[in-house]
Image (cartoon, rainbow, N blue to C red; front, side, top):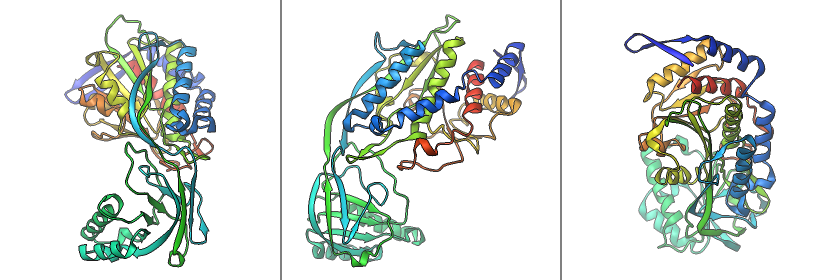
Length: 441
């Protein structure tokens, strides 16, 4: 719908046809494609306790996939995998569906607020001694061996505050010693506790470690702590079946070229029986944007067949998108362009475009559309980065962007990334810009 006229090499001017002017008017006046009520509904549902953090405890991933496939069907998308929206694949994953408890001395700590354990943590129950050290106590190999001998079968508690003030070479050496304490199967210590002043951020693990490793950042007198009690029930799934969700809308042109829109639905799941990571910005917001675009293109059929994919296991080393690109449900060579949405819930400082410097003509088109229609505060450029589900496609030669919003709430992999605090600041204009961009490809 947009005509591009090249005035000189490296420069592009976008001439708006009456159709695109009318589309812009409709989009901004009536909000077609930017259903804020629907967006908030999607985020609210995906982040609700019933969805278990969209992880792999209590089948949270399957609950989320079922909801998205139901929405695809309700909106009118066709299933991409024969008669099914689902593409199943196996993963290995460590989960924590039951008890989580930690007492250090006289302090009972709150899960995911005062402490986290590494997601590779094995099951551990009981009362143990605590052997306290600071980072500066393990600057040599000899000091490390002495500490291991003195600790015996206790937990080693490392005061790791002030790390940012260390000489980088010293930091690297100390961190190597700490990793030895964490993961070596040649030593007898029971576990490691890192006392830090950094934010507590979690992840998912595809393996189970030999010993528990914990992080705490609650202000307490660590030098009064000599004992602890811990309860962790870890369940390791070696062959857990999860699923991508994929549907499409037939294009009007008859071309075999396709546009692909993606957003992962998985998040970090449960941290014990009662605590879950809601993942509002990461990435219920991206799913809401994807579904809004699907809703729009059902009403206003796209020129090219448009495929919508919501991946599982993005938080687990991009396993969902990697499985899809190795077992594609569409011809990857026919993909005209792919846009991956992740972290779509803010935008007060605009958006950033990964691969913008690679596909510079598309980036220039996006920024010019934004400038002409005065939508987002800014559109920043970034080079390649293998940090979301666009990456496996890019590695296969598929032209693609990964776009994320900037500004606003900075919660990431924390329990405070929740529906109640997600502003969706620029969601309306972001969605408008994406429709204009997609219609111009």
